[in-house]
Length: 628
Image (tube, rainbow, N blue to C red; front, side):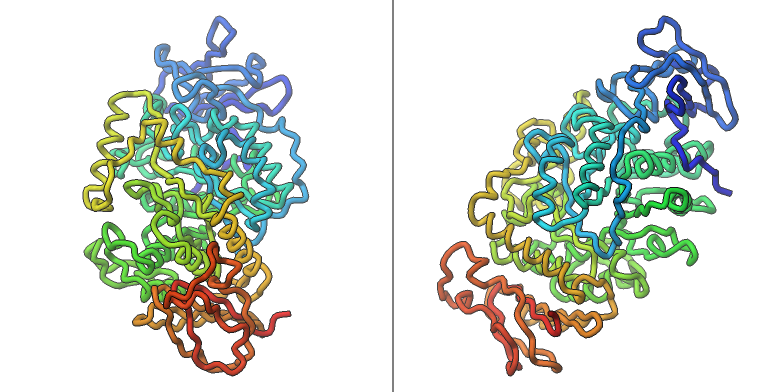
């Protein structure tokens, strides 16, 4: 039987339900005495022992903005595990924060259908030179101009110092102080909703970061029952697990209710170990459903998973875990091998354009076949899962930052290939995701960076990065960038001034046009996986993707080869009208020259009488039928 929480308000940590009284609740099941030290008061305030390992207090001696710590058994002074604010970082005291004090004006906001999401992933610290929530607000008009309607923010839970991807957070409830803290986050979300932009927050429920992690002093948040890439697993099914499960479920509910976040992206759920009768993801789904019923607002749960198991995204009614969608790395891997990625590491399993064609049709590439990387039969078919349940991309923070040198596609592939990759993502029957800066072909790398303060930990991270590339991208020249060096972080910041230069202006306009076409054409916008046909010419490295909705159809032609290719058009109506051709002069940054590639000869404006079409090298073309 699952626990029942109060959907109306957060209960853990320090909360303010009335103007003059604070409620304190902390889980410390093995402690014999717990008190709270409020800075500015001489004596600590003792808490009362409650059932199931909780300690509580109601007091008028804590106000919003007060610093405080918990004292365990009279000796261990620790920050609040459910702290919402750590103004002095992971090693400092917690700050009381009243989530209800913010004046929201987004009551008319309606979270779009997942089918309509166009996601833009970004990292707060490197998206702008300032690296703050407030600075991101200044860019919302730009994002609207681009055409995206959802931003996905990499983790903001408090991490050491000011430079980190965010996956080293140790206070899941606290908003990173260097980004602006919790009130600045509320202000950002409110501004996004005013602009018509949804906010997806990346959260980490599979491990805690190492520095500043004092959770073991409070209770068994971790278990040695399982091991993960980060050490002991989070305790979702061992002794005292109920308090841990509540901790994370209340966290998710807090982001939705108190910060008006529209969707959570749960990092690497394949690393969550839970053999409870009700899996933690199922229980989370149940409580989010209860919150939505109470609030009338819609929220999504999106997962990162490498299991190829549709059970994660199947509804609770079908004994699934009820997640709304998942990232689909296999589409990315297939696309990257198609355009020339070396088949090392996890790319060893992917055979290029044939697997890309399968991903368009079947979502998962591996749905029961033998995986050479895993040395076993892998995956299950996802035949009945709609397109909105899969999120696809040509690059993201992982796929860039986990390269040895952190190169983006702009540094690896030609300008023409980048345009084909963009098209391949944006005409898919799935939810597209862009990574910040790709829309203007940003040349800066996105490298892995940290700013730990413990020398032994710094060295361990350095050694770990070196070991990671022993087999994967080992052939790349250059040393692995030092994650601890500030220069590594600074190099990863976007160069906004490039938007005023070529070829970046042209690439931006190209993305803008692709996004607009996706929105305007029902055959692209409606994510019906059954209204799709894929014609593969593996020898020519071409794909013809047909999609339709009611009487409107699109024909998307992709040539990944470096030579022009003659292709047989599918039988059927022949009055196709061209919508976009990546080889048109408007998408070129230099005068086209006839070098044999054929780029000086864009595809026909119509296909009235054509049965064979010459598709230019590294090109992407969209035709439409029956669209006003």
